[in-house]
Amino acid sequence: MDHYTTARGTVRVGQLYRDARRTNVRTLRVEAIGRPWNDWKGVTHCSIDCLVIEQVADGVRTEPRRPTSMRATRLLSAEFVLVEEVS
Image (cartoon, rainbow, N blue to C red; front, top):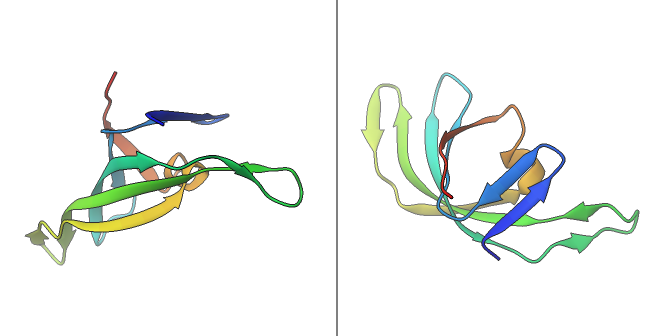
């Protein structure tokens, strides 16, 4: 899949997101979007695989290039800010 849409918006492969917090801020690039699934209550979820391309902690900038994964609803929550859109 190259995109996934929730009530909060659409996640696309290639987009960049940044942590909304003030410390230990990561920049994430969406690498892959999993296949949506329904939990036992019938709620649809979708896993988003990202790559941490930059991290700034205590004023030190690094490029860890490590994978991380989360649900689309978390990535589209107030915890993250969309930095770069792709079409």
